[in-house]
Length: 288
Image (cartoon, helix red, strand yellow):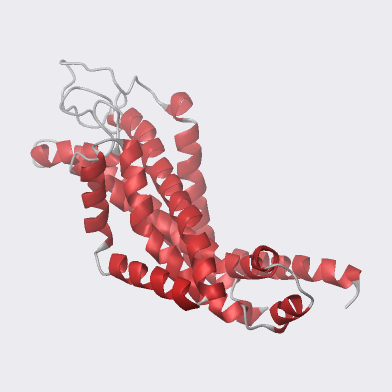
């Protein structure tokens, strides 16, 4: 294959993947939902109609109206504005937690899959032990140990999700390292580090991207759960999980306090799941 052909081939694969993704209506819907929530989080100061921290004892638990679009909470704060700023905590927790999991898990997975032997055995045993603990239970335990804060919650969620990426990367590396181009790189004497970074990692990246997208949805639910338990974002800073924690006391008097934060969590998680499924289908190597 000529140099020009080698340069065109990846672009053709990317073009086919993009076309397949755009033809998947559910994937496009997921992408649109994710983009909407990201834009709302970034532009929260512009879109907010009230100060999210401003209390008003004359507007306690007001129903949705022209002044308060989604109603007010137990302290008279505007729920719509608090949800906008709360989306920052949820999305940031999802993205940063998964980034931590990827940065920690992928190198260990590559080392275990490429070298095998005692390195693979040691990494695999630790990974299996961590995977035996339910994800949310492990995240709660780590967050409780580190202390209640959004930063500690993100670290706890990221470490809890790390075994998923170790196992995935290890399995992909075991498959890729037997390919002819990897054996050829070994035959000409390329260093192992160069083989892993240039030949193995690019070929295991697509499934990692798909898994990361789906795991963001799981991390958002975990952050909401930790905030609900008082281990995540701390008051008065808004968080969808902490808003639900307060709303549980007013389910009959003010149902809008729980409906809107719960609906936001549902929609953003749905968006990331649909986006991840669409990416998985579009990046499936059997179709390229």
